[in-house]
Every structure is written in C-alpha cells, then in structure tokens.
Image (cartoon, rainbow, N blue to C red; front, side):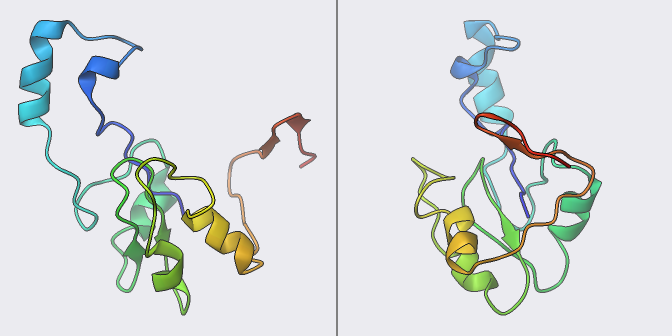
Length: 119
C-alpha cells in the first residue's frame, strides 16, 4: 500500500507555494527526519494511514515514496527502494509486478499514461 510522505522534501524546491528563502533554514531544522515506524503518510487516505502502523506491516525506507506491505512477501517487497527512482525497476511496485500481484483500488480511479482506464 502506498505510504508516501512527500512533505519531507527540501523546502528550496517547494513551488506550490514556494517559501521565502529566509524561512528554509527554520523549516529544515524543525522538520523531523523520516522514521518508517513513526512518520505518518500524507495525502494517502485514512486506510493507508490505518494500515501503516498495523502489527506485522513492514514499510520501505524511502523517505518520500515509501510503501507498506503485509504477509509472506512483505520483506521482499519493501527491502530495497532506491532513493533516486522510488517507483522504478527496483521499487516495491516492480516487485509486485514480478509476483504477479493483484491491485485493489478503493475510492480512486486508475489513470493510464494515454488516458483513463474504464472503471
């Protein structure tokens, strides 16, 4: 399940809204470091945030693009997630593909690169 916390980024790259440069040091010093057991998800929904701390759930170590997993393959799915390409060929998403996993979407639509999939 996605457990992203994309607000843990460098404020110098924030655009919507951008923050004044004189605020950036304060933002950096007051933002807690990512902790996969404690850092809440952001904009992932209530189900993802309820699932994240559930006993036996494992969260990947990516600070902004993490995923959580539960079950016999959860360690394999979450073990490695590159900082530079969190959704690419070594990501939890790729591992789900390798496992021929089924994806359940609740309360969201699925958008393809070239259009919207029928729901």
